[in-house]
Image 1 (cartoon, one colour):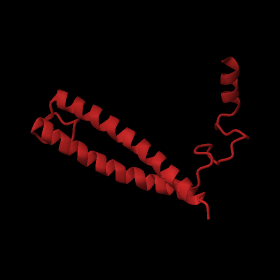
Image 2: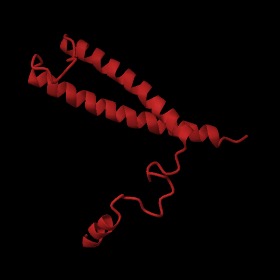
Image 3: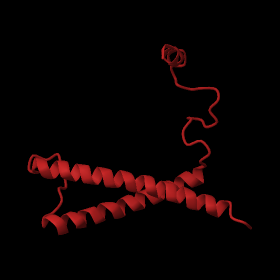
Image 4: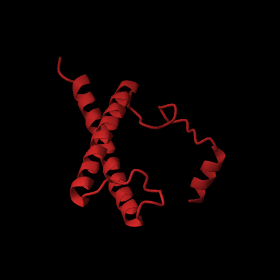
Length: 112
């Protein structure tokens, strides 16, 4: 562990020589694929939030909180909304990005 700390201190910028990407993230993911995945994640997040709001209305017979941090929103509603929306949106974004990347690879690497 001490070696790991010393390595981090000797390279404060975090840049390592063996990284193939400029910032070391998303190795092997091109700009086009990343843009497609980003668009899919945005669209899926929009659909998920609308579905969650509709589900809240149908289940609880009231509007979901627009601003859970507001003092006018009950703590239970604020926490429930934060938990439900955060989990659902996070899962949907990951699933959309992965599905989009898989579809992109199938399209690019299809038999011609």
